[in-house]
Image 1: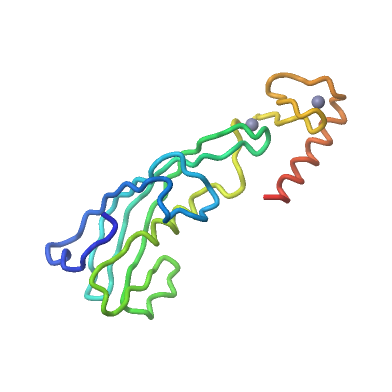
Image 2 (image 1 turned 120 degrees about the vertical axis):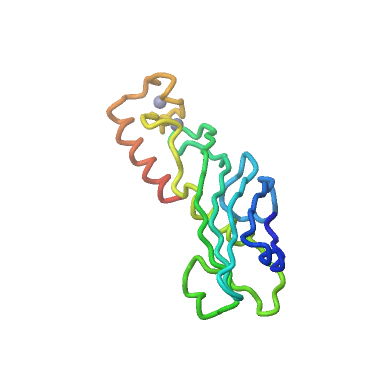
Length: 170
Ligand SMILES: [Zn+2]
Ligand SMILES: [Zn+2]
């Protein structure tokens, strides 16, 4: 439940638990494909009329590709959530704070979920394994499957250049 009615705080802190589909519109434009749902848990606590602290965590699976050999790779992503929702707009300088309208009757936790996930997604690409040999930049063969027969000294230089160009594109 990621939409919390403020009246619920009359009974104390509110436990938050939700599962959002990986293709939920909330995650559009994230720059990463999600290969599983986003599970969210946490506890939302009122600190006066106008401030609500949310502590929780999220986890999901991001589908991406190895930056060297382009093989599909799934990466487990976890993030801690520390967010402040507030009607006190002076408190908004804190980057983890989210505005609530003065007349708000509920808190929408979803913007914080999106933000934390955005920060947790690997931005620079991942490797299928630390010693991935990548593709031969000449013949395109996956060098993890063995050498391809192109001159290896030349290969090595080109491979670094290709990796560098790949970085520029990212
Ligand atoms: Zn790889
Ligand atoms: Zn080759």
